[in-house]
Image 1 (tube, rainbow, N blue to C red):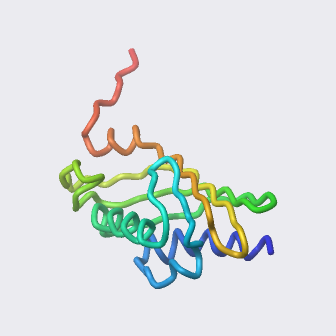
Image 2 (cartoon, helix red, strand yellow):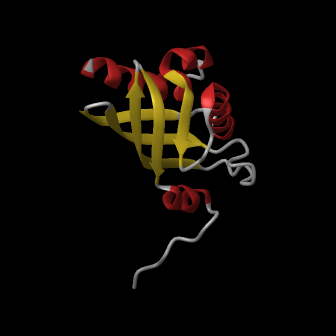
Length: 139
């Protein structure tokens, strides 16, 4: 079971988000899926979220750096790269800038599918690299 949960977590990142294979969503996610802190849910929520990221970063790449599994959960350390060529979060206009940020993605499983996700994305680094917020100068 443990290698199956890790493989499913990797499939979400590689197949759904990076490659845009939305047909994989029902096999990976339970209908009751809830994403925190972003608040979307269900198969349609996952589909819209993945499509939005792929629109903002058409060359989105996700490198799975490490995985830790415990019981019904998998923690994924992810390195995200891409070029900001589309609207991000419905308000950040394309900048054409490249980004490289880290994220921690936690998935909880029930009955062989993901029912809950928690994403901790380094949004400060993302927005700094996009030029949306300044980078502090340490002096």
